[in-house]
Image (cartoon, rainbow, N blue to C red; front, side, top):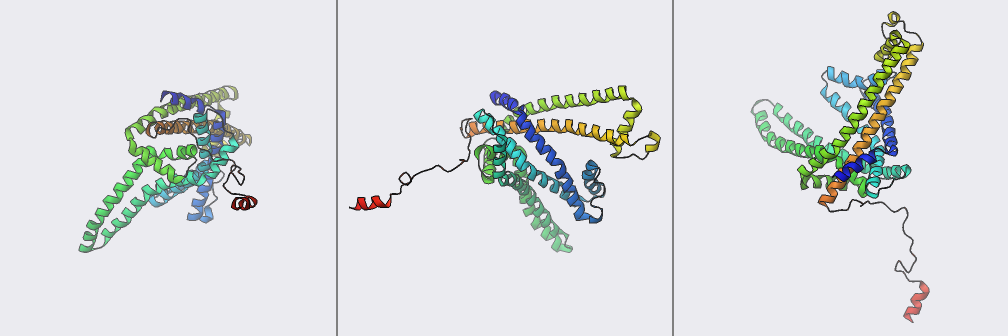
Amino acid sequence: MADLWHAAGRSAGDRQKRRVALLGVLWSAPTLLAGAAISRLLSDPATALEGLGKPLGYVIAPLKAAYTQDHDVALIGYLALQGLLLTLVWGVFGGALHRLAAVDLTQRRREETPAAFAFARRHWRGFVGAKSALFLGTMLPLAVAAALATLGRFDGALGSILLGLASVAVVVLVFLAVFLGSCWFVAGFLTTPTIACEDSDAFDALSRTFGYAGAGLPRLTLWRLALFGGVLIGALWRALRVVLVVGLSLAVLRLGAGAEALERVRAVLGAMGTPADADRLGITAGDPIAALIFGLVLFGLVATWLADVIARIACARMAVYLGLRGRIDAVPRDGLQSAPEAPPFQDAEAAGFEEVARVGERDA
């Protein structure tokens, strides 16, 4: 465990993995905007593009509206839509990142980035399908149980009898959902490392997940806590560094440009545009430009930190999988499956076929 712990930390510090993770973070931003646009088109097409100039508020607005109006179905539907879109995006970028980590931790060499993305595209359905199967396996029994519970809405004695009969099925379905959900929560992260390391499909990833969860949940939890402890240490340290950079930058800007100029930039950023009291603050045409530049710099710092955290999580997941695979299946750490680049060449004799001329010689 100690060897894998240090190896995962060293692997996560690779700039190649951070660049791939950063690409995934950058692609996630327009994906969230697309999800918000789809949700608005389905609910109110006339106002679908209103507020698009304020990206953060545009993404949060459907969630906030559903929460304040107690529209639970719309709230869950919006979260499910955004989760599905992000799963599609990270099926490629996450798959490439885990493949880079698998090659590094097993072969102790760097995989080429185009080769990692080619691997992710080839197994894209497996990466997405395994996660979707775990999600649907948890949510569908709950949905069916809720549908059966509506039988108790019938009036009179019939409703009471149907409710009593349905309660048996509801308990069974809820138990199934809790079981699948617990396996998903504890061992669901093993699906991506399995595909990245074994060159397999979604079925193999799901069977490996449930197999390792059933082989020893305490051991799996121990490995996960130990390896993800390193992620927490690195993430907190880099988060503290980002906070210090932003805080000192604001202090230097306040000292150099003055408190009034910095207050105008803060007002523009807080309003995500021109604030209502722009005249009182004396906001000029250059303040939105300064706020945009400062906002982009701040977004770059946060995106870089997120990329580092995601790279650390991917390497920790791969280390946990390799440790469990060695303990449960007794597979060496350097075991890595890769599809051949091209089928091996064989002539007719090596393939077991005889030339026509030699067939006649053999018969004679």
